[in-house]
Length: 402
Image (cartoon, rainbow, N blue to C red; front, side):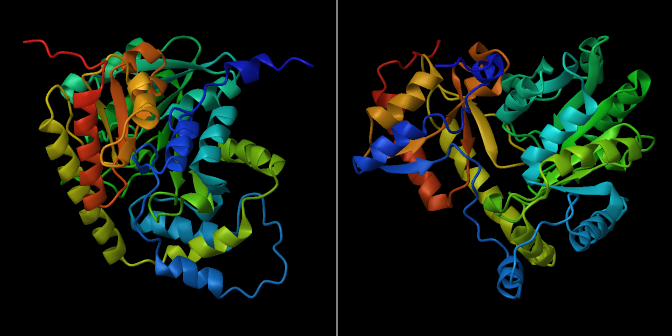
């Protein structure tokens, strides 16, 4: 049998999905599982998306332009301009979701062996994309004790070396819900200009903001025309994870021309979903207001329940719909598997993503899990009942220090 590539062997498994065989086995035994492991919203997609899909009279589902449908790109650019993000439609590349946009941005900005600085805990797939591109992730640690507050820009500066070509930020953050302040973004802007490096900003959770201040885009910072790259997606904003439509946006013409070549290599983004997103972009503000209100209620419920559990550390959460929390368990990976293999509470259990996969060094997340609060409040409340009962029954529970 021929051997597999070193690249394949080194590719990390997803902490979000790798416990699925245990979940499937539990479901087969009749256990009801509350899936808080994955950011799959249960809020209905906009009616305008489905109307656009149903109204199409296509007879053949053709390739589109590799950069995406011009009508979609123009409408997306218009929406950005309305938000105060001034771009033209030819600066928008339609991707197969934000995942492809992230991969293309890394492949376009960095050479094999280059370094990219990323605050952590980080979105786990950043590690996979970087590994596939032979890029080194340089982590900048944040800590649960101060709600994963981002460190001063001077700490970013310490991580920049001769091989550093980019900084990657996620704003609002997955898996922590952290939001960058204007001061922090301005500091990163100056750092990027001083060192002439890229800042890639993953902004897919922009609408999930529970503070009284707006989330500022990397493209709203002055002087960053050559240095700023924005990644966006409709997956979470419109509850369209399965549509696989995202956007890669930059004012750097050289970057856009190079990124298009990667887009040409995969031919085209999906056409039918692009047509649906053209419709979804007409969703009224009331849709987003309702979504924000719903997720704030879920966040408040989650925080209240977690902070009432002995030994659990739950930070403040400002955005997105994730919480990285610390549990009084010997090993979060073992605990999450035990929840599915050996535990149920009145025929129910809960599935989390172990936080070890959200760190460059898995040991840093040994006692933490990421919770995606994507279920309606009654289900989320029952999931927390399961967690509370599980912590009481788990044989590897740690005794809190007096």
